[in-house]
Length: 379
Ligand SMILES: *Cc1c(COP(=O)(O)O)cnc(C)c1O
Image (cartoon, protein in one colour):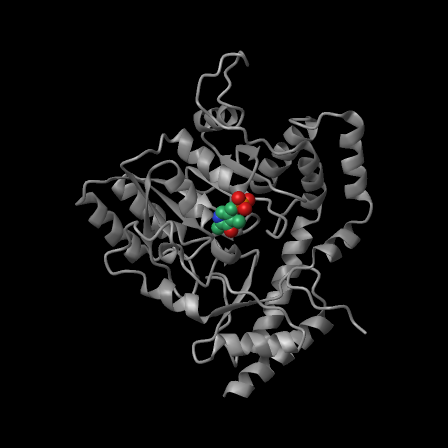
């Protein structure tokens, strides 16, 4: 009897890793440097080398990573920052948390990422209002980088900085540029279920800007200066635990192989489902790390579909059923001049299937057979 199918099988990864993580954690316990131990600097070097960024600065979470960059840019009340609504709420939360105004922009239905026409019209609208347009936070949703050539053209023309929220996309590549090297800064998350996850909360900022890197290194430790008893900025407490750094050093060693496995699994899903559902594809020249494998089911009752799969032992999830601009805390913020019709439609159409690097072909065949049966039942 096969094991229950899991949406994201972290246990399989743990079994594959064997004892190395246990040993890495034990060595942190033995040394006793639980905060900012040598593993933290080691991991930062490894992460920077992995993506080719000049600076990698670890911190407490992906949300904190965004907040740290926005704080370093002095984002404050009266500032408008453009971001998608169809993403995890943390993207807008980091902006609104500093008193600034997130301006919600629509997305493209084929990539789930920022629609540059909606972005441009939002910038024009903000420029005509009382708000000060200062920057863009683009999201690389489900593991695929946003269309940075087009976004950068708008950022340059409108004198806006660009932050890439790559919480789901560390390891991906945009037209020869590795995620972590695009924009003023890139942020990521090491939440356990992200493509590169630790065993708790964690995050990082990547940048090639020396001054910005220095400011963020200070902000994550209460704004400390060269003399640690003289805080030069009002910062926060957001360090990556040494134990999590030790875990990530080991997981980074198998990350490339995991990304390859994820791509192989997605190709297979697409072969088996492409004729019955709208399957996801990366744009030409762009690679994805497939944080999620997300189908669109425009002509189907999603709840019925999900119940059918659940009865067949196949877990599914909806990312995201409620775009941020419809959530209670964010409803009053501005949206693109033509609204967010694509975000609204996708919120009703999308469903994600089990996705992780350890999905076997046998289990995958079971999943795709169940998906085909669920769709046939509604045809
Ligand atoms: C997960 C996620 C975050 C937040 O990361 P945490 O580490 O959970 O704080 C931010 N943005 C996006 C797009 C995410 O998926």
